[in-house]
Amino acid sequence: MSPTLTHLALHVPDLDACVAFYSEFCGMRVIHQRPGKGSQIVWMAEPGKEHAFILVIMPGGQDRQLAEDDYSHFGFAVASREQVDALAARAKAAGCLIWPPRDEPYPVGYYCGLRDPAGNYVEFSYGQPLGPGSEAMPIP
Image (cartoon, rainbow, N blue to C red; front, side, top):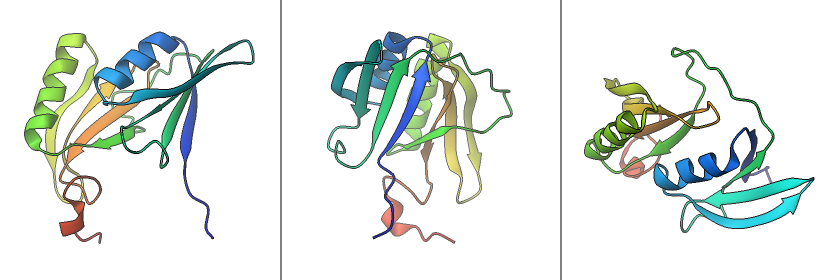
């Protein structure tokens, strides 16, 4: 059996702010939390995907200072271009929009980018060969 990616673990400077961000913008929810190594460890997942992939966040990290043209990011697929626009509008109002919505040729699609409270970039896309509707799109 090949290895399966199950989680991503991050130390963050403000645990509560990150939990709120991933709840509000990504629709993730806390599925587990416990004390650990003198701090709190939080597991978050998308509803229904708790056994497929989780985000583990822990306090103690440093703020990441990524350049605007640094495309290191976490990617979330959404169901429509309108959802990308709505997320971008909410992020702009919250002061965390870094890439306004833009359209790129396949396989990139329509996307925007946000900065989480730890400095990580988070992309929301529609039209990539991953996520909603991807079954109809071939991967080159």
